[in-house]
Length: 110
Length: 110
DNA sequence: CAGCATCCCCAAAGATACTG
DNA sequence: CAGTATCTTTGGGGATGCTG
Image (tube, rainbow over all chains, first blue to last red; front, side, top):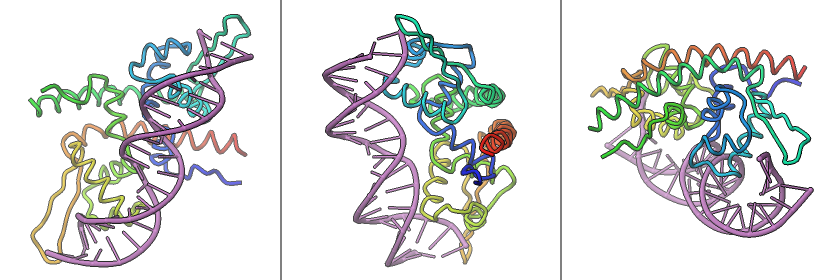
């Protein structure tokens, strides 16, 4: 069966970046492995339910890896998958662009 | 008044990339100025209404420029703004990532 | 040619409460 | 600690028809 993702790299990337927090989460994990609560603390304004859903989505899209440790209390670690690692260069450019954008917009808005 | 965009370059970029076609449209315009109908033809599956809305959104976010010529029949040209030009490097990395992603996913899916 | 106006619908996101 | 479950709300996006 043929892939559902199409052959356009732009449409494909747009699809996996859906969701209000995808890029932010990928950035967080690009700084290193994090546990659920760490992510929750590091991403202000995200709710627990949203964080869970977004993590599941990124996991399904093969961008992140979820590792569960059989301990009490439970420990679950999230990190970039091999595919997620390939996204680092995009993140780098997004960061540069984002800062430029913020600078210009704030200048324009006074 | 303070900017509504926050100071996180990742959240900011995520916001301006909202919408199903933002990245694709930015790519199209990165190849050169295009008229409305050209964009419509070059982006299969997008509806006229959606194209209009997405173009307005990108214009409001200062990523593209809309130029209207006082002619009959009407001519409207869209192109990357100065800010949109700064997005080219992101697009380049998105393209590389997208191709990698498609290649890997298709391999995995058989 | 290049739109806009409208209606409608559903998926995404928010809020809240509960749990192995 | 790391989630689920459920309900509600929002608004993005599809479809259609009209127009300067």
